Length: 186
Image 1: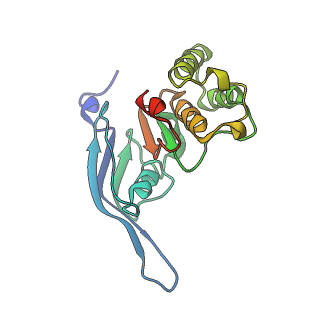
Image 2: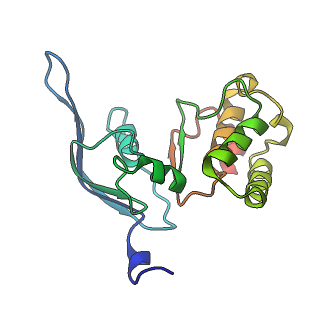
């Protein structure tokens, strides 16, 4: 049972979010300044801008990797920088430039580890795995070590891994790196 009004709370709320980086013998670098937005449940949002505009910095604040210098931020009702462990159960993340997969393990074993980490009930895990393996055309790759996958194959696997626990929020930072046109359409 949910509290009255809880469903009207945005999934993400950022208010006057800023992030500065201190640099020796140089002025501070202000990567994000005064960003405010809400993202409602079920809403799809594209966060676009030129290189160096602060997109990845904002995403790192949303995931709790970076702490905002100032402003207020809640994601799935949590403070990302203070409640990272709880937040990890509620979000899925794909960073196009970094892998979350285990390099030397086959995909099947990587997904099984994620099932244990997220404490996904076995029947739900198997249903989710079947769904995402089919959707992302990974069946022939399940016994292949991650290090042997092409960039496009690895990105499809990253997306499956980020969805395996059915998160409330999916954050994709450069997720189409290496994906072919057919994969992007799926």
